[in-house]
Image (cartoon, rainbow, N blue to C red; front, top):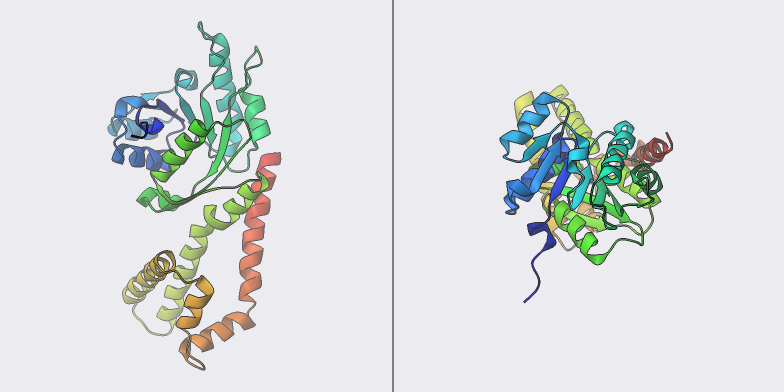
Length: 286
């Protein structure tokens, strides 16, 4: 019989109670994690009340979370340093110091593991193990895609804990073997939902301009996006083959794809992913 999953007994803490933290917490609760094992530090009363409504523990003091088994840094990148420093101060001041610090999981875009470690180092030189994660907003409906990266010091138990936490809201959970690839994940799946939202937005606008009522255009475009996505996930065929399957020679789809090609569609997508990837890298340098 396999040992119990570490997620079921771990004490989990979140610095920041925004939408992504709320999505992950919701996923954890749905998997049976006890509310008493989850704590959230959030300065804004509105967000803190939302977390309290889920039944989890709440506080306004980041240092109160120092005793958790896993601490998620779920704040904006520009706030990550102060969050880590608050944890380091609490660990340094603890009456009973332990060589083993909690696992730190950061979802702050672009902030490197070296920075997170430096900010989280205690006054006596202890450094927590750190995992960087890039989830995406479909996690809000349990359909997320997440990339993870960790240094070589991460234990198998810690890797399993981080994986299981993200799997509570992600259907694709991918570990990358180089930290710079997490910026590519950001440009692909982290920012990717907005690319699809923009395309659906323009599909609706185009069909409306050609005379289709806006409400009908919206329903058709949304379901088309959902259906195509489901085919991509459930089919054993590659995206390129699925595209070919729906494209009859000299048919309507062929005409549209030729128009895409003439407008430089491939280059447009490549430039967009590259721009988001570069911005993620820049955030880590600020």
